[in-house]
Image (cartoon, rainbow, N blue to C red; front, side):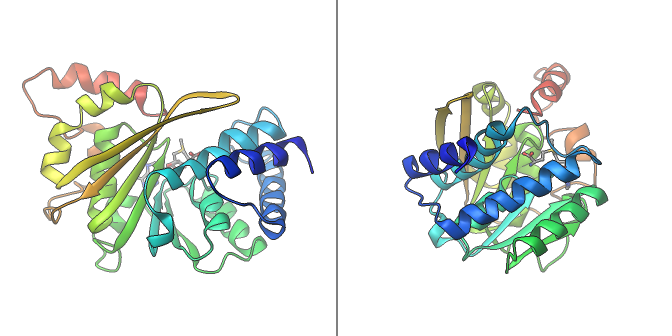
Length: 258
Ligand SMILES: C[S@@+](CC[C@H](N)C(=O)[O-])C[C@H]1O[C@@H](n2cnc3c(N)ncnc32)[C@H](O)[C@@H]1O
């Protein structure tokens, strides 16, 4: 077993997850595909093999602390990129019905190859902006769980993600050190969209510090006006105007990738 795989298996065990042999094989194939595609298209910043297994695969599995994934049926991952956190979650929780929505065509082609190579049944990718997909009645208010990693600042993640949730469903935002500041900026978006903060799970592991899973629960139907049309949530985040909105907006752009 490679050192990367050893770290993944040990880290997952601390989360109460057993990565069985057939799951390890899938992680191995997934890692090979990422390495090979990464030479052609920009998928992830790869320092070394260990970094892929811990900072990406293990990091993704921390979502399991955000809500009871065993009780989740439909899960939507917005802006999956190379497949995080959706693919590691699907490998370890095979019962999940997973949809990945991704706006870049090349990344969607990569994700389709991953689904085929790993034989991930009940997992598909949609090439679309999430703002548009959220208008589709087959997707709007139909998911038990929505995940987002390195997608955007928190008020933007809320506007993109909450419309997909059923009442009682969870939005899991994977965030870095700026979490308190971003939460402070999210009060207005939370009240407009009808969600409440359920819990913040801080975590660290070797090579990663200051990480958080932020879990929200949807309490009310989302007004039809949200999300606004493609690009607007990012350009004009849901902040209450007149209290330094513009200054906050500029700062939020810096926080988007954490
Ligand atoms: C920084 S990458 C993060 C990818 C992955 N979640 C990860 O953690 O490595 C953000 C991804 O979200 C996609 N994206 C950004 N806005 C989107 C939107 N509104 N709808 C769908 N995909 C979007 C981008 O194309 C990009 O692949």
